[in-house]
Length: 261
Ligand SMILES: [Zn+2]
Ligand SMILES: [Zn+2]
Image (cartoon, rainbow, N blue to C red; front, side):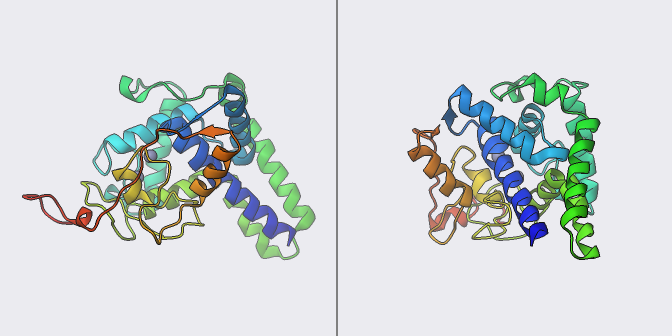
């Protein structure tokens, strides 16, 4: 039971921080918050992602590249060019590390507007700190595991960020349905996305890139947006003026002269 609670908490908090703080806030600036709350969520992301913390700057640059070059050779993670999610994520890791270590100059349009915190993003962002987090996860399992097979879950804790990234980037551009015709392979994988908290509405999101609600149709539910509505009421975030997702049955059709999917 203690293992299940820990696994679910780590999974949910890690993907929530990825979609809410890294994706919707750092990469897209879909809403505003005070510097104090920004620091709170930055720390919360570092703490909950732990051994596989993703730096907001590098995440934002890669993600903006993904939108600009979706499913073309310059996309950092398109399943179109790889046989397995592992191959794709290994390729993504190489680009991520080059951006993280400032070995490459990203296109200027992909830079700026993301939170930066030297202590968490650079000073404490290394293999030793990751090792401390991994040791703490292991100690928890040593103390609370009741069956040997539960230790098989440990690698997922070590690599929580890349695991969830692989599910979103692979599944969201390969499996599911489309609400909108667009030029890339993006799909909506689940209509009620509890697995990745809204990230698997890739087709909706690639069409309305600045809309905080990733759900477009009445049967779709984006859990993160439900939390964001509460944060808006509590005065933590400000989504005023944000883009609104609009869907009509014609959106599925390719424009005249272009091939349907
Ligand atoms: Zn995508
Ligand atoms: Zn995006």
